[in-house]
Length: 305
Image 1 (cartoon, one colour):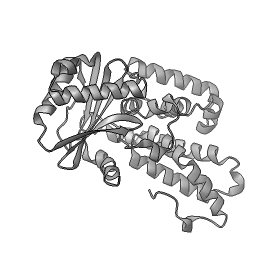
Image 2: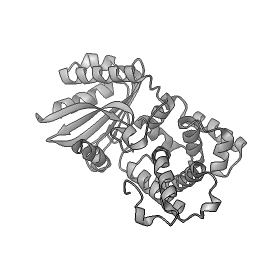
Image 3: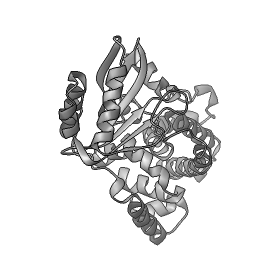
Image 4: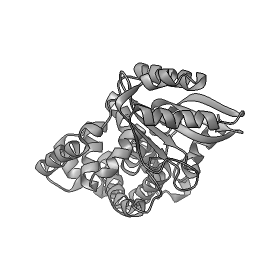
């Protein structure tokens, strides 16, 4: 998707309409990304919404925000239904596409809830939900929409949306990791990096919660664990294996990924891994994205800095 709708695409009354769309675009991208887990797909969904917005008779749109959020959410629900079928054929675990410096693309992440909804571990868990449950939990928890407004967006009832929210939370259960604050998160990440870099495997294992889960996404294109790894010992062994295999030209930096500090690993100036964590006092979840197709936007953003 282009960074903005083209002026030549606007109708005669298009200046005001285009301005309204561009103002709302970060919000629309935020909804679409949380629903799809893909930056590329989110941009396509928002572009489709722009085309529908441009074609809609102006007199029928009383509230641009409500109209556009409704269009994007319903498009994203349809997309999610088809994407789930495709992901059943995905090789190994599936993780969302990481977004570098998310605030520059999605707009300000002003609340803890907005950041939590973007975490790779959380977006990945939402794959378990039905399209309705995912839409309700995104609108309710990331954007604090009241149930009656969610009902209007989804063409449902407030009672049905409340029930969908309850079922979504029950379905996620205790697998949804606690994220803590940015300061605690960054401290854990830097302690992980220090232990990893020094080869302090005992210190590394002590950072990991008893219920730690590691998920690695290679998409069948590069080597990665084909199933989630459970427990401190298994995760420590996996990470120590990465350490042993790391070539001399490796470079690791802390960067903003999906609104949270994460590790970006470059080998010979090529982004090879994004490692994200979730947890509070200890690390509960490690997500490693290795699929080159999912790292392309991170590489471009780093190159354009």
